[in-house]
Amino acid sequence: MSKQTTRVGSPNPEARSQAAEAVERALLRTFTGEVVDELRQKTGYNPRQRSITAQRLMLVLVEAFLLGQTLGFSAIRAIFVRRFGFIRPCPFQKRFKQASAAAFFRAALERLVASVVESAGLVLSGALAQFSDVRVYDGTGQRVPPRGRERLPGCSAGKAGSKWLMGYSIKTGLLEHGECAAETASETPLWRKLVPSFTRGVLYLFDLGFFERKLFADAQAVGAHVLMRLKKSAKVRVTGHFSDGSFGPIPSWSLPYYLTAVSRRKGTVFDLDVLWGKGKDTIALRLVGVVHSSSVVRWYLTTVPRDLLVAHQVIQAYRLRWLVELLFREIKQAADLGRSFTADLHAVEAMTYGAMLAHVLVRSLRIQAALDNEIPLEQLRPLACLNVARAFARDIIDALASASSSAWRSVAKTVGLALALLARELKPSRSRPRIALNLGAIGA
Image 1 (cartoon, rainbow, N blue to C red):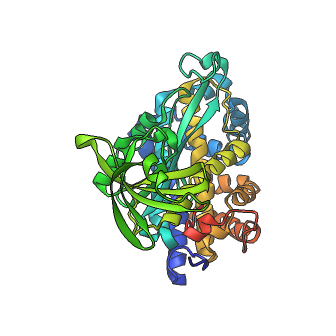
Image 2: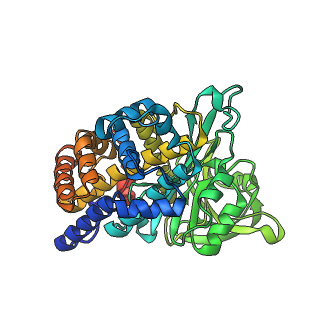
Image 3: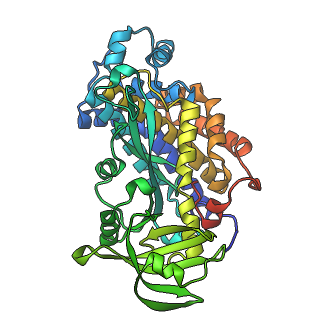
């Protein structure tokens, strides 16, 4: 497999500059009064237009994220008072404790992601170039105060907590969207609420919490692809195997019986055609396995055909799923997103969506820096970019608040140069996995 450095966008420097300018404009526009008013009308969010406005609340949450103080009213209010003047605690908190507030910040997040993705024009390369995107979905817990037990019951008795199901794009490195429920909620129904339908050409990576036959069938129906581990309880029948460059049929053996007829030497890779289900519910899938020991075989069930990914690439592609775990660690350690200081469901949602909005802003500045400075996106380390952007927190918010194109252009250029100088890694450390780089996952 080629290990040639992957670059973002078009190789034409002029096109790169245009893409960078488009991302720059998309970032500023999301925080302008015009767009904020549009989102307010769409969601019904209408804080009284006095000292507290929807635009100011957006800016305060972004600054709170950059400062690592996201989900506490005291810290957020202190930032608001410093920037915009005194406000009493009760009216300040009420601006978040309403369903329309959560809807507003969610709409702002979706607007920002859509505009940046459209402007940047990023494409996957390498083995993943066959897909329009690779998206990872997983859930993470968020502790809330005990008084929230009734609406947000926790998995442990007597505890309270919320669960966030989040979608992460491997192509752009952006946290695209999220859905909140009680910590006890099941992930598959939550995902179906977040993603009503699959997108054609996208590869979806899930853990075993999503293991369901209908998920594979729905993806096949629209031309999308799913990849996840095989659950031990699933009874699949082997109808063929690919070996030494040729395909051989098998008379519908069970998987355990098939394993008795083949070598299980450590490192052996299986590439099988299987059937799952009975009658009209039967679906044809591909099963890839690798032997770790004589008694341990790890299986990966997928809809991806062999002409898109060979067996060892399927195994590597699934390992990209762990990037969302690294993302969760980043936002929890850097922004304290693993807990909330309020038990109000709407406030939890509104402030968390605000934190996600800020995270997307930082990752978008990373994209702009790569385009502006003609740097491969994968060379700008995401966590290092967040740490660098924090040093410019006040400058970023000042520029966004001014709504001045020249002021924002100056700050964006300064931050971009700092990212290029301080967050760039020309050669990955040998201690870090190179799978994302080898597969062409540029945003990871």
